[in-house]
Length: 390
Ligand code: HMG
Image (cartoon, rainbow, N blue to C red; front, side, top):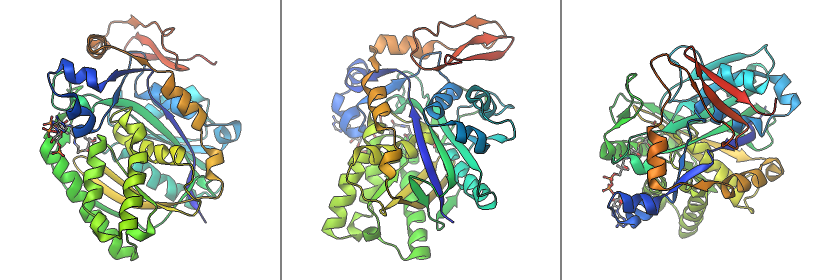
């Protein structure tokens, strides 16, 4: 039985800051951010969007009535969850009106969370072939103003429906994974900003990639010739390119050209959104599928997932016949083209505006936020969510 990705949705906030302007404000050459880091625009989440609303908005655009009935497992991958106890998925389950006979949980392992969710979903479908699983990967990446990680922030979510006989991509069974206890990036429970050892995190990302790639090749006998493209977790777009470059010499000139060209396309959405942590790899996959129109069904795509701390995995999928008909290219083109640019001082003001943590209430103006699902405030320590379509 084939199991894999049946649908993919995506959402990012309607505001962004231009990386050239951020560079000027931080007294660095713009090329450092646009070429050295490889980012053009960075999504800026208004206070009316949080990981719950981003995920709910991403799922809203793909689910039909049949999905709502058949989804019996919601797995929410995040590392910027809003509650130490209650799963962010339960809010989304309610906001989307899913069938109550469902399991709902949150999973965490930095940017690896959504991949863990997908593997869990695959097992669930193998046991329950008629079910569908909603996997959500949603995060807001925050390092702080004037920090070295600032240029690698971002915000957004992906929503994936995992099912039998998937319409977009069948996931293959062989994969290679790795865990090691390292401190390259972490966020203690008392902090709303990440701590990072930037250079070390880059080295570990590449080391984990080389280890899982070698292990995968040993298990499968596959090599570069067997891949149409390899998509990466993209904390910033130069990072995946650095990892890809470490293996390009294993292939022919044709392999090099194909994989490098397809990498560029797969990094395009991420270049314009920033790091969305656990959804980042799937945003890269979406960028490739939606923007490379002549990618043939039957092509094998490699997927490298990395979550600091750290866990890495290399796995693969095969594109299904007519997969393009099931993508939401128009909606995503509109989502990108209708965004509003904010100045650096405006971005800084939005960044500093956070919800009260002393139990006081706050009502938010959701009219300025074009998203259908918004955070309308906080009352009695409870976040108040609104689905404007209801
Ligand atoms: P930095 O110290 O600001 O930058 O930190 P740099 O000095 O290393 O420069 C960056 C690149 O720009 C260099 O290129 C420079 O040469 C180049 P490289 O040597 O790397 O190829 N450069 C220029 N290029 C063109 N024109 C110029 C110019 N000037 C310089 N004028 C760093 C950069 C990414 C370390 C920092 O932003 C950071 O700490 N970010 C957060 C951590 C991170 O993203 N790590 C990635 C791997 S870990 C991961 O992916 C997991 C993660 O997503 C979290 C999770 O799992 O939850 C982060």
